[in-house]
Image (cartoon, rainbow, N blue to C red; front, side, top):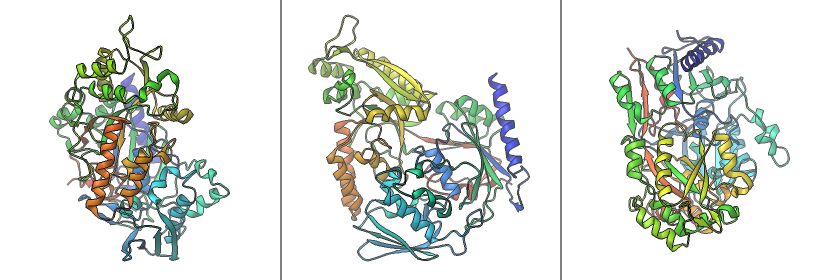
Length: 550
């Protein structure tokens, strides 16, 4: 049955490629490309094609291919032009002027101008306390965004901002002529627009077909203002299991896999596939509900001694050895080592010491019941833990089993609650994050800047990105301070203080930093990753350069 499903999915992808005007010989309507169709597999589905609703990294990688951004990263992690051709900054650092490509068009033929940029940024800023809150950290301190002419954008900030280019790199520029009608009143309608395929595009590709959790098909955009892709288009096939995805790659139903499980690295290398590995920007963690208003059934989880005990009951070395097969590092700080040089190296992974963990729980007064399970406020310390689909397959499930066994030795039981990503997010956010006890998930940050990761834990992100129940005036104050620290050394100091605060208060128990591992067929070349990813939310360059080998 499993093999039949794989063949059916592959046949569906091929059929849709043809129906969308892209064929393996390289025809995309009237456009001819020299590389045909690039097919890759992914284990994280698109959650929403509305940028004001989506939260997962896969979807923002899709947005990168279909929407303009002012700047992007190159393979050397440097900011380079994308829709912007150049930019200047005033002496006080508060006014930034960008010049954009002249004569650009959206895929529906409408003009693509600086006015679309100014409208997108102004709209995010206007509704940042409501429907656009998920993108609000990209417009912090933005006073105004104007377009004095069709090819000039002027951004004025209330205060100097330390990472303007990093923030702008993450903002998909939307077609004003389609989205403007949703901004009436309080703008809530912005989150209701489904933005279904085919989507009007300003990037190098047009999303022409999307079947949720199955496939997404992109064809080359003839109207793109930048360098033309070598490929006629690309397709993504989504998989619920890593085994099925790797089998599809090895049987040449796919050309590349975005995220290779550690268990498949040796096998793929032996089979002749090109396997690329780099320090990742992601960390896996257990979230222990930090909300002091959470349900009485698990309110003890806010106790610092309990959180410290749990941290010392995690065998990170065993997780890296068994779950990641050595392709990663034990976790400590909330900034992953793949994020440029921002991780605080003084923060070490907590020691694995069950004796210390048990003593801390005894000190906190949690006695053991007749069955060995500890008691807190007259209820057993028996907690449901949310495992989203990103976690409960493969390495994540192996890590959970290790943790579950060690927590049991403390007299604490974990009961897995398996949910798809959307349901897991809803469960963690429900009732202002008062209902859940724990989750186990992964967090991804940016290649060049820590702002995204730091923003996750702000009070303003609660109910949007922040699923920890954590809200701290100290954290928020430091977040604002790092955003305005123009001296790099000063900013590093503030970011380190934030990492140390997170290590003390433990809103996240960081487990590990998995390596970013991709694989592709040797029949393709030019696939140079940016930030460890060839399908990146930070750059269009990898898919612009990939081509058939030979």
